[in-house]
Image 1 (tube, helix red, strand yellow):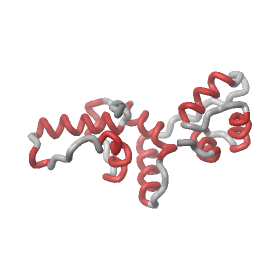
Image 2: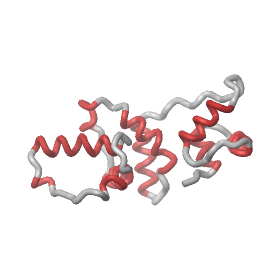
Image 3: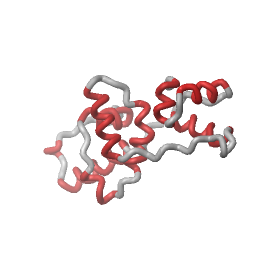
Length: 145
């Protein structure tokens, strides 16, 4: 999936003109990560604008939730959202709250490979283990081949 230059500009904290110039020089638009990597490799360090600080997890969750509420695309947020989730220590992960829609967006590709179980059929330990697994999926730590 290709991102628009507007989406890349917003994700990288650059102007659309800067993105257009980089794309003309060969910058990929397949993902924010690919564009960042290309810029780090191909731009002189003195000319490259430093990457903006990563948004906080709460800001990302709020933005993603708002986008999903109006049927928007959270694709451009996924790399930063997954990175922020990945950085949450294991003992704090259970406290992170997300809407069901956001959980579905983050875990859908992996979730479609499993049958659903009801909470009543799991012991507390099994439910905690299942929660830890699905958080890892949402954080991009588990992927489908």
